[in-house]
Amino acid sequence: MRKSALSFVCIILLSAIVISAETDGSPADSWSMFRGTQSLTGISDAVLPEKLKLRWSYQAGDSIESSAAIVNGTVFFGSMDGSVNAVSLTDGKLLWRYSIENPIQESSPCVFNGIVYVGDLYGILHAVDAASGKVKWTFEADGEIKSSPNCYENRVYFGSYDTHLYCLSADTGELIWKFATEGPVHSTPSISQDLVYVSGCDETLRAIDAKTGKQVYAVPLGGYTGASAAIRNSNVFVGTFSNEVLSIDLKERTLRWSYMHPNRNFPFYSSAAVTDRRVVLGGRDKIVHCLDSATGKEIWSFTTRSRVESSPLITQDRVFVGSNDGNLYELDLKTGRKVWDFIAGAPLSASPAAARGSLVIGSQDGVLYCFGK
Image (cartoon, rainbow, N blue to C red; front, side, top):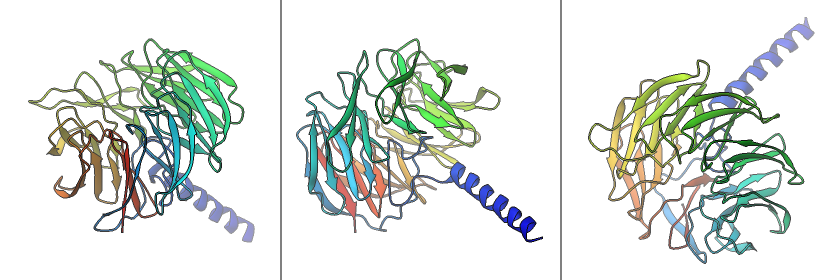
């Protein structure tokens, strides 16, 4: 009887773990990679102060277009000056700086098992010790890397402009497999249920077996993408350069819905943040769009003064997103009403990161900002 009861409890706990893995965002104390989770949902469990204040700023040597990662109280980010930087989340003091001479543009650090992985515009993926800043290994692709790495089961996945999706050993950098697409791979691969999803310039969403590198299936997108595919509840959400936001049912492998603004037809470069009911992303039409995740119908929109290439972060009922107008915005998730903003003065194309009650974002004039109490 006791054994049966124990088995029942174990089943309940395992079910809770599975549900949590499908529904939770990035943990409250860390934001380990671009978009926070392997499925790139852009959701954080961090609890931020009701009123954010600038706590500190750090001046890098050049533009910061790489979104930050936050792990164990350290902020990791890349810069166009050819460096990976680690600064304290508490006070913004530099802990170490890894110089690579090659610019880091949009490839954002992924921190996994104590190693920081990031790509540069010369096509080199770097693995750097998170504690010391010393290089562990490097791997050279045949084209620039703007894709952010994603890590899964001790492997590193990333795309390159040489048209390939790569899988490397996280420990050694040894090539395990590479998959050839039909165009540059700008986006960050998303990972769910042993499949790696990549949306690229070949106008196709591809599902690749994470272990073997073999394509399982492909779905046409009708336009090339710079945005990364977010996955939630077996659905993909991604914007395209054909001015559409698409939702694809991964079980049926078919298009669920598409959204196009009725009047302003501009590309979507921002990657979506996705809750159970909402899809929020920026457009080059200067608008932050909020759509119903089930139908694709617009719920609200918020207009900035320039294109929105920053990918939104959602925590609780709060949306944080940068704009190329130089402002960081906080919007109410339910209504789209502006709650707060911060004038950085330079374009904010990088995406926010949140952990331990703090929000971090970099600007194109090389300043990294941290907000909290």
